[in-house]
Length: 240
Image (cartoon, rainbow, N blue to C red; front, side):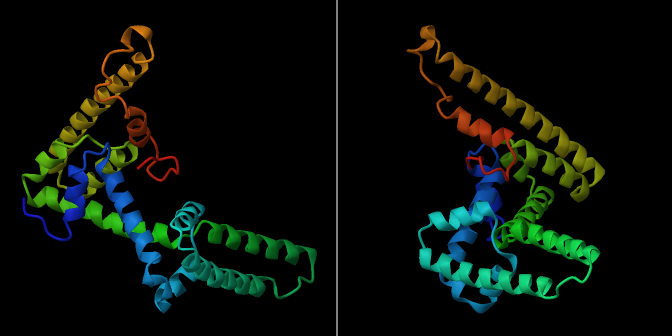
């Protein structure tokens, strides 16, 4: 299978040895977007307009803060705060004349604030890119017979992305292709969950006296891998 610039992130994810190739792809996108934001991009007018309007979720604010570009973060937060203040003043500029109007205004402000608190420029960039990766995955599945082998050699997927592939596969593939795809995916996932179960079991045995001097085999880092396999890919506790 010959790689192209648009297929490399997908094939690299499948070759990563990660418990979920799609979690690996998602993490790579996230790192790339954060690096982009804290590079010269935050001084570009169109980018700043987007970050002012969309803001950042708590998880990504923490990521930006930990990158140590405090000046870049401060500049973005300053204009984001100005944007929030300006919008809030618009929504509260008119004093309600009646009690009913006050409740309506409060409901409008509350709904707006909730939306702002859950809006994130980085999340949106990740989602848009990730959707293209999923599309590329099925494009390669349909166009290149050797791509199936690449999937079969992976360690399966986290529960969320396993479900995603089954759902998207039904949309992207014809009935015959989907039947083969789903069968392969179910076998792959079952085998790798069984492998993970055995690794966790051996990890627990290592705390028993009779196994103390036995090798760890592949279980030394199994808890971290199990968290990735079994958790929501968007969960902040995800170790990917």
